Amino acid sequence: MAEKLHIFAVSDSVGETAEKIAVASVLQFQVERSITRFSRVTKEEQVVEIVDQAAEEAAIIIYTIVKPKLSAFMDKTAQERNVICVNAMAPLFDAIQAKTGLKPAYITGLTHRLDDSYFNRMKAIEYTIEHDNGQNLETIHQADLIVLGLPRTSKTPLAMHLANLGIKVANYPILIDTKIPQEILNLKGRVPMVGLTIDIDTLLQLRRERARSFDLPLNIHTLDELVAEEMDNAYRIFAKLKCLVIDVTMDDIQEVGNTVTHKFNLPLRVTHYRF
Image (cartoon, rainbow, N blue to C red; front, side):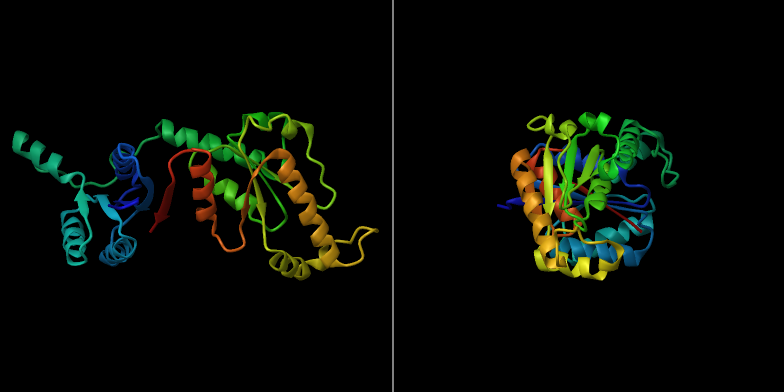
């Protein structure tokens, strides 16, 4: 029995229909699950790439490709690679055609509209942009998640990735002399918080590359000492706030995002690839 379930939602339009069907389905099963959405799939070579990846990751494909030729190619390619593949639209197309005697128009993208999900996502993105790098602390209590981290730990890219899933994120930078403002301290235990860190050697290398752009504090004599003090301050802050601490040295943004959403039971993990 599989311990994890991965579904590829594939579409020749924006892919929201396939994704929603996948989400509604996987929520019925008590298993670790994730969804990857592939949109604008209009070429056979894109289908081959997706099916190959599904075979490698033991994923199920659910698709809403309207064009019959490409749909048939998807079925054939998946069958050849022993990938489970479900055409979400074909049964209803067949039923409607049998009932009405009419043929489908095979026009892509007819269902895409500005629905609640779209507007929620836009609000999350707007909020996250307005609360980047410690801005607008007076409304930080409205965040779904607060991300704190050292320089070069990809706070902003992570925040924007999560915002695209509809999560309102505020991020706050930590430096050698950072003291966490009362607005954030007041939210301890009320709003989920994540502390991002990075391998000290990696951080030193990044800092050396941009060392000319800042001056060392008067009481700090070397760049190594500066970075060590910054990391110590970060860990003191993380401990005080009881943050979930994540080392981002080796993980990409999507993996870190998956860890965060799983830990705090935030919206279902969804990844989106556009062709």
